Amino acid sequence: MGKTYKFLLGLCLTAILVICLEACQQNAVEQKMDSFQIVQEKIFLKNCATSGCHASPSDGSYKQHGLVLEKTVAFTNLVNVLANNADAKADGLLRIKPFKADQSFLFHKLQQAPADHHNSRDYGSPMPLGSRPLTNGQIEFVRRWIEAGAPEKGSVVDEKVLEDSSVTYPKFEALAPPAAGQGVQMRIPLVEIAPNFEREFFMYQKVGNTEPLLVNRVEVKMRAGSHHFILYGFEDRTPASVIPPFGTIRDLRQPNGNLNINTIISMGYHVFWAGTQTPYHNYTFPEGTALEIPANFAFDMNSHYVNKSTLPIPGEVSINLFTVPISQVKNKVKVINWANTSLNIPANQRTVNSKTFKVSKRTKIVSLTSHTHKMGEKFVIKISGGSRNGEIIYTATDWEHPTIVNFATPITLNSGEGLTSEITYNNTSNRAVSFGLTSEDEMGIIFGYYYEE
Image (cartoon, rainbow, N blue to C red; front, side, top):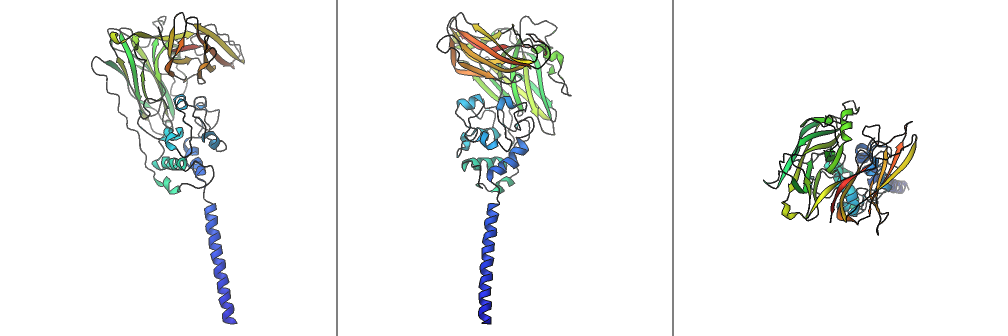
């Protein structure tokens, strides 16, 4: 009995031990973090869902991207949701497409690919903007999670992938200038962007052309951290006292963040010529058309960099203006500068101001952007007249960084038809505001390109 008892007791203890081990192992499996939870806590919360970026709708950049990555809404805002970026949306990209990382907009944004990776498609700057790129392990973890179906629950990626802490920085090579007789190049030389600072600046520079130029392609390339680049001209009515000196960097803001009034005043006389919100831009005008740049012209070059790191970063821009002979040009592209100067914006309320601009000849619209001051909350452009009457063809919700839309198929307007600007202003001040050039006044201008047939 004694030996049998001990034998049976041993069997029981062994069985209990096996059961306990299995339970512990099962419990360990159950306690593994969900892969999306790892993405959220170890990637998004540290790099993306930060104040000013993707933390909440109150972030300054929210009007552009419309994406909040706070933990209670991040999954819903990402998976199977159409991208907000205009070109990505036109390409049908979802922010995250389960099982398809290469077709997921988020994955495109996290990759530190060369600036021309998207074949001239304007997918915006790589993320995190102005910060150290994600590690190769973090990017690979996101890729594997998407390829596994991007589930909200369940461990589908080995967390050890994150142990690869190496970082691949994008290489920058300035554009090679056009061949002799085929165009001109302009540049903003190396400038320093201070740590934890957004630097937006202007530099007025001569094109160097003694004869008019017919430009049919514009190519722009910028260093990482860039937010946008715009070529401006000045209106003919610009006072000589406002025209800036050549070759001098003029900052929009002082190091303490205060606006430089002289820079703001000069912006009131700007006329849009070309621009991009992506580190690489390569736009060709429709066949047989070209933009004429007058002889002895000069551009006010505007660049904006974001540096969220603790070290200075370099900023640099190169711009190629490719030309064609007059024999290849059937229609000269003209600059749209249609302003609603009859603005009436009462104090302490939200107001919508509209104005229609009609054309007298058959017109092709090839590009549109907009301009307001800080009260401009939403800028909508609609077609007026014809079979597409009332159709919205442009929307911008960020007055500092308005959307730039290039139409692959030009918008056709017949004589008597036109475009309507419908601008929502939010006047939180105690005074009525009208059209004017200072930062305390307002504007409502449609910029863009068109040609007449």
